[in-house]
Length: 401
Ligand code: GLN
Image 1 (cartoon, rainbow, N blue to C red):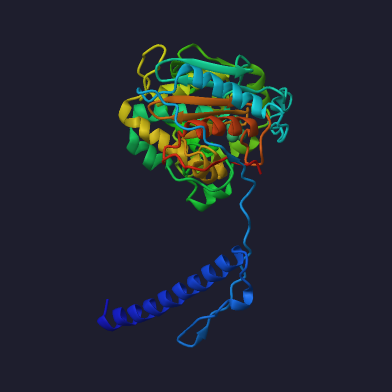
Image 2: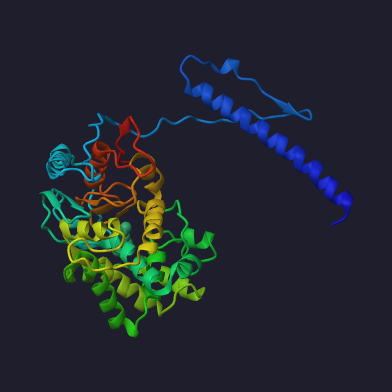
């Protein structure tokens, strides 16, 4: 590059940067003034750079969605840093009682079977890394694991193919878009972005080492069962219902394959993924799966290692970034826990080194996240100060949209 060109670029770049910075200052000034009671817009100043007037930006300040404060209960951790059994049982009961009458949200109905699951069902479960189990409500009801399964197939691929393969072949970025977004694919060279959205989950399925569809499905079911510490089964009605209506996922799989971002046949990846989502779990089983991650990859009940310890933080990071889909930021901001939701109404949150907390209730909010399960987990998290980023002094609950 010629020196004069460099200088021209530098001058232009500096002017542009100054202009941009002034714009940001003007915007933030206006925004903060509007947001602060007592300010009037007449005090707003307009700045200029190189005699170019800065257009006053129209920024409408939107109040955050409903946030209800909870009273922190104070620390009840034992010297071993795990809450006592009495505390955990009390909190599970309280979380259940508090939200059992929240009738907001709606069952998923794009998978016809899910619309028919009783909306009143509500279960809360905790499994600690030392294998204690605490439950309240409908914790024996077997619901479809749905997207919570994505975590464990990610774990399987990481174990088999390594962290590099996950990073390069699937990706680990949050999408900021819905879980079945086709736009997200288009924006990222038709690559999956992360293993928690449908595209990335099908890419994960395709990366599992297997000889054909049956073998792939059996390997996934066996692996997820190992996390649960007991044999899990397919809920056949969920599978049939979803397989008859999953046109969108079939399309996503074909787009991935067309761009060499799927590593087995598209119909095979989509069908095995649909089966994986139709695995039945109850709240206790899902909590055991989460507790295995909390316990560094070793199942607290069977003591079997499911995932190398070095991979666990990677899996939890991906859950934190994208486990709540396009609400992941809000969830991290308020609850600060790696978690994964599913349209069957289950949510599993992992407290590294301590426990997993599961909520199950079929009605979902617009992002596809169970409302009562979100509230229950966030309540327990808040009461115990479990936020991995540091427990805030004033806690708040995530609101439904
Ligand atoms: N099987 C569902 C789907 O592919 C999973 C979605 C979810 O749980 N968010 O649409």
